[in-house]
Structures are given as structure tokens and as C-alpha cells.
Picture 1 (cartoon, one colour):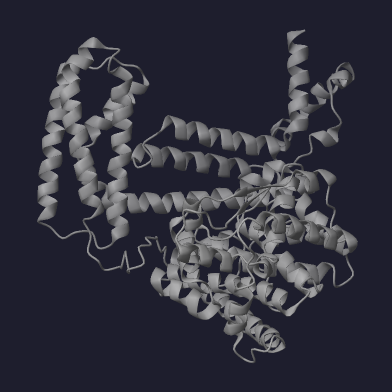
Picture 2 (spheres, rainbow, N blue to C red):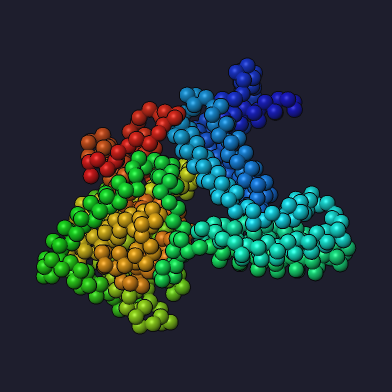
Length: 594
């Protein structure tokens, strides 16, 4: 009976997992199949298990999470080598898979999963190489590493001996710091910061291990209290020293107060490769400048219509001054959201579930949050950026002018429906496991695509509306230009701020917040280019599939959301019915017809 149920469980696992199905010997499959009639009552329809590599993806995430909880010092050889093994093991597992035996959805998952593993492994290795360049700052660390590794096993330490070791290490740290003060500092602030981060990571692991024993082992507490305090203080002083120990060969603060991390051309090109973008940074900058020129031409048309001639910046000032009085803005947001939904449904452009229309909410953003993001943030909850009583008069006016109704008509629908709220709603209900592959080119590209599509469908009602939509489209172009130039080390944060003010027409405080968000926030180096580039990808895909008559427009839009967040070039394979190739490489020149 026990053997019988083991076979039933294995059969169910075969149905759940494409990898398990392919790796189980054929003879064993036949034997297990004989038990099928005994367990029909236990089985769900096969289609319920056909969810790509769902089981494997969940296992991968769980494995990585477990390892990160176990190996807490993320700047140690132990950590780098163990995570490298994790990536290598999973890549080997995928390589052993019989790709041709997978269903089409699983083949798509295979492509994007392998790409993610390769990307994460590549940047993990880059970080390891960078760590090796600064690891000499912690030559004293091995006894401390031994201490927290033994703590994992619960080994009772020789407290008297350990106290002496801690005292010796404290003296070594002070000596190392004195010697470094007399020698050439790091050539860049990035290396100095990495060195400081490495010491901080070590310090946290030692603190955790100390806390494990302290108070529970009387002998440990008696011997270790003072030596630990001295060591901990020396580590704090040392990591602070290291952070400032660099030559100013790369300007860290250009007067803007914004501190970022330009990654350089090589890393930028690899980031683009992993996002299936077959263009160089320079080519994308050129396309952004081309798109910006188109926006300027349209701005001139709207400016002349409003009586400002060729002075389109004066027309922007006119639109900024259409701001609403304090206290009335949330009502207007609700109106703009409902207006966009009605526009979409009247033209039957996309499926909008009633629950999605019912459940979006709004919240006012704090003054502190507005310093980082002076405009909307969205999703199920649209976060409204608008002045509070605590702001200065200048801050209030900049916020109101920057969030006027005509500017916002292009962004409320970006954040809610058909943008991020509808997107998030569908992501929770269709191939949810693919959120592991989340890419900003799909996330932000989708919302930006709708700004382009609604423009072409005459969504703007007036010249003021057109200026509002064009302002944001120019802004997306500007993001490509300033963020790529920044990471190519051709533009500083202050130059980026000036660029947004002079070229796009931003309020200065809003421009500062935008650049701060781009370079000091939690965004990846390609995030800000993903809006326009991702939007252009979807626009080009629509031209291939919808404008050519191969697919109805509504079906096209629904299909994008039903496939969740995958690179748009891979989405193109899904929607076009193209053969899925195991070793697929990016080759889609989506800018050629734009």
C-alpha cells in the first residue's frame, strides 16, 4: 500500500512538473501509469498543471531565499562561491532538460528563466570581481568569519580565548587604518563605498553571532562584553573611514547633492542584452532625440493654436497655470480615471473586469515622498502628489503647476486603467509565477504604449491636452538621453537637472526630484529608459500583428496582459506563433519602421 501511494504521488508530480516528467525513465512512467485508474479521484484536470515551469520557478525562488537567509555576509568568499554554485546548478538542470519535449508555454518559460539565471549569475560574478579588488581591507577577518560560522552550529566558544582574539583584531584594524591613511586612496568612490559595505556586512554577521551567545552563555558574556564593544566601535570607525578614502577622479557630488552609481558602457551593454534590446546605448539615445524632435514639432502646432507662436515653452507655462485650487484635486483625479475607462470601453479596446474598475483607490503622498517623486505613483492605489500646508509657498506652486489637469490627463490613465492598476490586476490572475521575470520594459512600456495609442485615437480634446500629453512624452525621451549619458559617464546629475528644466520645461524642484529618483532610488540602470523603449516595442509589435490584420486590437491588448511580465521580444514570439528556439538570441530591430 505504501508503494502504491508513492507511485500515485510521483504521478501527480509528473503532471505538475515538466522537468520531473522529462527526467523520470520511460519504464517507470509506464509502471506508474498502471496505477492511474486507481487514483482518478485524486487527480485534477491536466490543464491545471500546465503552468510552464511553475514548480521549478517556485523552487528556485525558495532555494535562493533560503541561501540568503543562511549566508548573511553577502561580501564574503563563502557567500559568493555558494551563490555561484546555486546559479551553476540551476543552469545545468535547464541544460539537461529535453527542450523539445516541453509544451510551448514551458519553452517560453525556459527561455526567460535561463536568461534571468544567466543575467543574475553574470552580475553576481561582476560583483565578486569588484569585491576581490577591495578584499585586502579585511585581511583580519578570518577569525571573525570562523566565529559566526561556528555560531550557526551552536558550538560553545572558548570565551577567554575569543576575547583575546577580538582584542588582537581591534588593534589590527586600527593599525591597518593608520597605514591606509599614509597610502594612495581608492581611485573611485565606488570602490571606497564597496570596501565600506564589505566591512559593514562583516560587522552585522559578527553582531548577530555575538547576540546569539550573549546573555545565554554566562561565561561568554563575562569575557566578551568589553572586547566586543571595542571591536564593534573600531569596525564602525573603520567603515566610515573607508567610505571617504578615495580620490575624486569621478565626481561624486557635483553640487546637486545627488549621489548615484554610473555603471559604465560595458555593464550597460550587458544590461541591454539581457533585456533583449539589440541596440547600443548610443543608438537608443539617437532614437530618443528623433522622438523628441517629433514632440517639438507637435508642441509647435499646439502652441500656435493657443496663440503663442513658436514659443512652445510659453504655451507650457500657460498650461501649468491651469492648476486647480487646493482641496479639489482628488475629485478631478477620479473624473480623469473614469473618463479614460469610458473612452476605452466605448471603443472596445481592451477587457476591463468590473472588479478592476471597482477596486482602485487613491492616497495623498507625504511631503517627504514628494521630494523623491513630485508626480503620481500608481497601481491599485494612485498616490497623489499635491501640496500640503507644511510646504513653502514656492514648493506649493511648483507642485500645483506640475500636476495641472492637462499634464495629469496623460498620467492618471498611465497609473490606473489601462495602465498599472489593470496590469497589476491581470498579473495576479494570469501566469502569476512569471513575476519572477519582471522587466520594466513590459511594466512601464505597457503604460507608455497607451499614452501613444490614446494620442493616435484622439484622446486629447484640446491644444492644452495635447501639450500635457506631449510634455510627458518629451519627458520619457529625455529620460533615455540623460540616464544613458549618465551611466556612460557623459552627464552629471546637475547637468541632467538642467537638461530637464531647459529642454523639457520642468519646474526645477520637480526636475531635481526626478533625477534623484532616477539615480538614488531603488531603480535599475535601465528603468528610466524602459518607459519609452518598452512603449516603442509594443507599438512596433502592434504594427506587425494588428495593423497587418493578423490579430484584432482588443485580442492583442488582452494577450499582452495574459502573458504577464516577460521581455517584449519574447512576447513577440508568443503572439506571432513563431517557433520557440532553445538558444534564441535577441535580433528584433523594432525601431526600423518607427
